[in-house]
Image 1 (cartoon, rainbow, N blue to C red):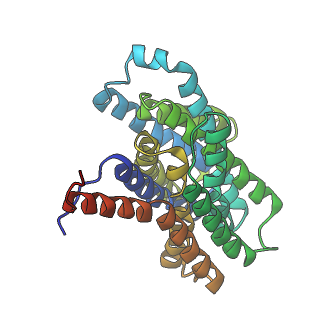
Image 2: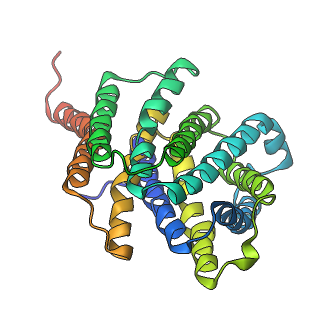
Image 3: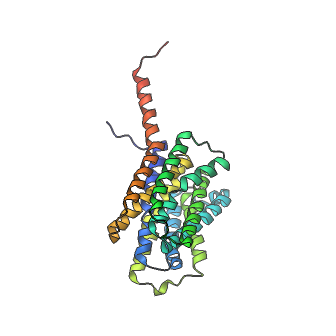
Length: 302
């Protein structure tokens, strides 16, 4: 079977999956740094801001004064939402179990679909709602094995992070011509402006600085660029279906880096989550492709 390049919805799915895979390393870098949350947030923003601003200036034709003025409000909203989400996520990882944080993150499809439907009137098919329900079951399976271990503060921060993230997906979808780089630079600027009042990174060791560089300059920016670009090609509810990729990948990084073996419930839940993503995206597309092939092979009936 010849290779088919990613286009349209497939491209959106591919960007969403790759973006979440790259972002899934955030919890790894945060734990490796062993730094206070505000220090890590400050350093990540400090490294990410010039990267995003430089990419906007060099490669993005929409990052002009006119383009920024035309999308001033949604850009400011994106900056506030993603900046809040990132700060809350870093705090959550430092205050509760990684597995618990990333399973809460997997609830993004519910919020994104609801916001898209209620606020923006975006149609969500029954198949997507069923896929969301399947992913929720997977999340519940994983979380069931962690009851009693995480702290309430960490859980609340994770919920704040995913709430802001879910709304931001719909903002990207609503304004597809908005500069991704400028929006992400705005979020880094918000993080920097808030965390600078509480951070004191001068006391951190080299490991913390290297972890912040890896997260702030490489993996997190690339992941956020991919994921923020995905809603241009696929509905926000479908893009959000790939958020559980982080739920699956983060425990794998923890296993590789720290030798933490996920319990059986986590593995089962991960499989259920993957099934939900496949049901909501790949399977209907494959069926549609097969119907198209059948139509081309069948003679026309006059």
